[in-house]
Image: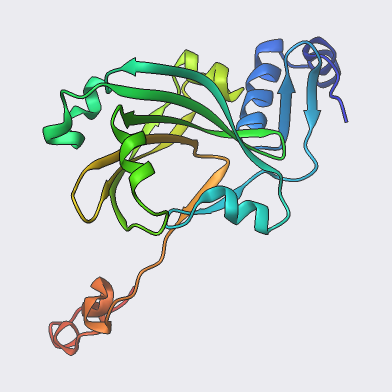
Length: 222
């Protein structure tokens, strides 16, 4: 369903056009509305929040639950360097030239993330010589950032919308050679990042709250 124009909504509810615009931007970010340039703003079929397990390929997960998930390449370069803020992650590989690609990640036509990938110029040769079953290790980090004007345009979202930025460095386990450096910026309001691990009872940090020593010291649950 297509929404009325901002002017029509402002007149109907007796508020300013700026108030309407901010409300629409918030609802677009949260996935309740989708905006298409030149066509207007539409109500989505359902609230667009997606669970993404960080330990598995995200498209496989969403395709398995009946969604249409795709990765759309929008930028490509055969000879570039890694972004300065990520140089520390590639250590001794800093001097290499890289193949760069930028993908828009979409689910059911809704953009949920931007992925920037840097592959060493030698990566194609490395991968062609290894079976697909060759083991690789991945390490990474997560931080909160805010969409730049350029990112907002690619994601069809307001500028400064919160992003969950996941950076991953993948290497061949056998040799330590760099295979890929990737940075995916997820719209925080559209995804819920998940992961799972196995641990012992003794490794659960909050287990100390069950300690009898706390009771003896007079500390009681609120």
